[in-house]
Length: 327
Image (cartoon, rainbow, N blue to C red; front, side, top):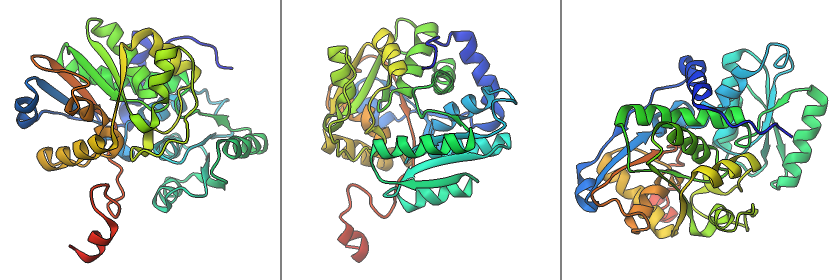
């Protein structure tokens, strides 16, 4: 078990310096239409423009480059079906070390190919957490690679916190800062950085109602596993880790849930009005504003858009037959 040492502000700043050569400093956008609609100022930190198309490269890079030369001799390993798989593969390539990524056999082919293209060794397994962990255990036993958890790793959390570090530096004090929450790496990192730099800011996590384990965990002070979630926001279907949960309980003010209809509507509205591509998980915080779960009237609100990796052949507001026929 990893020792629970919460990153302080200096370590977050050191992490920012460590990863700077390998990531983008993503832009902050505003939209007058949205400000007029909701009566406040909304600032969007666009991690959809980040390398690998998501914030995950921050945490993976910080974790990989924090390891000593002795520790990385045998490379790194993880299990992931999504953005962390690509992030770790690229971070390992940037450090010049091997990476092994265990992926469920039902992962999207484009994601498997992307991980391979970054140079990682992909090992497929049955699509259950038990099989993922068992397969990863065998990989680590065979290779002696270092396991980099997708979110329940302090160096990963520290790396994710650098998005908020940039965000607050550019925007100044925010009344509210919002992120989506799945495993909690982005939310816990954001909460830590906001606590250090802008303690009066309200930190809000946002989650699909159909995958509300973080909401229930936060409410009841116990970690609940996901209950067969089926949300369109497929990046948010994991449960909190012990490390992320402890930070969230201490520094997050609330977690709210939103409907599938609102997630899709908010994603479509961001595409239409801001002319940028975001994935469903990214649109969850804005959906919370649309549903009036978070009131921003007269306030200055920040949203971290977590990523923009979308299957353009399966847009959530387009039926497959319409896409094929051009109807």
